[in-house]
Length: 117
Length: 111
Image (cartoon, rainbow over all chains, first blue to last red; front, side):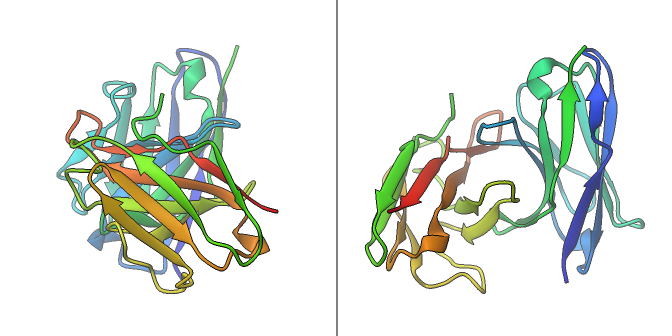
């Protein structure tokens, strides 16, 4: 059974940093693109970043490029999102999701990140 | 403002059919066949319903179908059931600096 479990969310002050993790199981992690998608409270989905199977290519949405870094450790079946210079507008539930033919076929349950003083 | 435009809400009675539109541009929906649709129930993670415009993942009922014409993609749900009541989001690959975008979401109410 495919499982994605996010962790690392919490309350952070503006300008702070946070590292999210996503533990994957039930599939060959190193064979799939992986994504981070976020959802602000009461709002819609917003794609954040993705990373190629071997980590050689990474893409970001405009508003996080230069502040967020996506990475993966295929030996540990884990995906990460290092977030810095956090802003109030980064407050959201962050989901990791497996890439599949231009879509995202498995999602975790999400981890809540709150940016507030 | 979302890059892809969806109606805020649609509704239908059990057994009826509804269609949700997703309008973009030639730089996203119209230019690529990487359009996908997601269902999200309150408090739950999204679920992939359609990928590559019209393909259904295994386990998704054939009541759900997808199509595209020009810059507009559509999700059709036939034989509406109470459990279909949820938010629906489209997504597309785009040639812009942000390579993947979602629509603003559509709330489906089953009357």
